[in-house]
Length: 299
Image 1 (cartoon, rainbow, N blue to C red):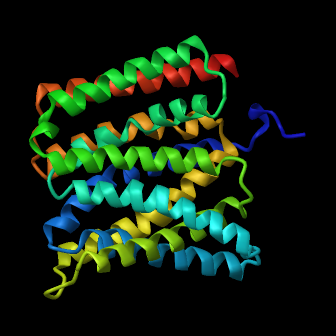
Image 2 (cartoon, rainbow, N blue to C red; image 1 turned 45 degrees about the vertical axis):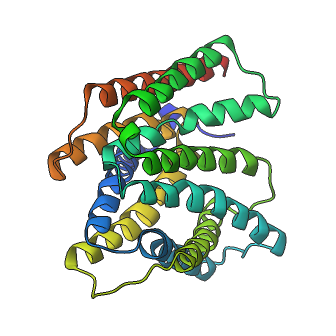
């Protein structure tokens, strides 16, 4: 039997705060990191997305094997490959492609719709939704429609398409993977990054991506930050949170990250946002909060 919350060691509270800050700030800042990497001229799929996931996945996989964690079976590798396509190629790769045309903050706002799509896909799989969850879905998708029809996204058709595909891919892959035969959580992350990274690199090469000149310091530092902090440290913190706090708290990054991304984009990249952009973000995040609260009550 697990110990009650009050019986946990005192340092645990500090670790929870640290892990949450890492997930909030680091994942919220990855959109700016992508913007800076693209600004330096690095290829979007093969390097900014693919290479960093191959490196991060390889490092995590090697550490886990060194510590004696079992390698994925052949069947598990097949599942991880599908997850890599959905979550990393479609989810992350399309965000990077979109940021060639749209601001980092706007990309984060669009990705904030992932919990809405996940809630909708869950109901399509036969899971019953409460009235509160349906209300949250309705509110959130009103914000999505506003974002796609009334914000600055309308001026960038390609960016609009990529930012529709990204949350759909991430949500579909997340829901599809539920109940599948998977290795341990950390090994699942490593295998998924390895598979997704290879697919992203292949996709970039097929589109003719190449590096025409030596990468700039900004480009190297940006990809390094995305690899070490975004793909290894923050993800490790998130998996730790999933095992030590309530899922609702662990998943709270969904409505914190966009706010941090918009703030960092405005502060460092001098991005500007219209009232429609901010309004759509507020409505989307309101929908996510309503869904979260409804699930707390149902639990």
